[in-house]
Length: 171
Image (cartoon, rainbow, N blue to C red; front, side, top):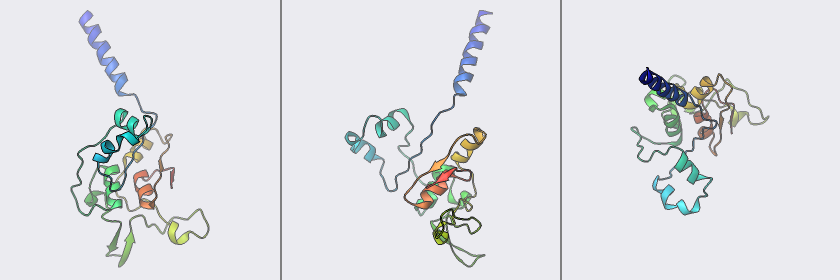
């Protein structure tokens, strides 16, 4: 009976620990940054910045893309969907669409409206061309849409694609 009690206690504690959810998830991609830079410039980082992310977070030190070319849009989409352009549909930053007979930008979406007047030419964008769910979409689903997902980037595609289909904001 003692053995059963101990085994039950261990199993129960493992189940409780496995169900802990993080309060914050931060994904950072720096275009063209080599992994070695994290260690080469270690002395420039503060203890509560990159050093904290490196010691208390997850770092992929030997990641490789199994497709070409490695542009921004397919790279970000691949990291956040966990699959390749052949599956998620973002094959480049821009590509020729045979049915439409014109070039299509990776986040083009004529069906959306813009929030800022005068930005109609640049602002009609969404993750519509992304054919897979992202890890951020799965986080929204796992929190019953109570979690917040925000994508921030200098490039529109760098904010829109990682933030996914259920993003609250993409800047």
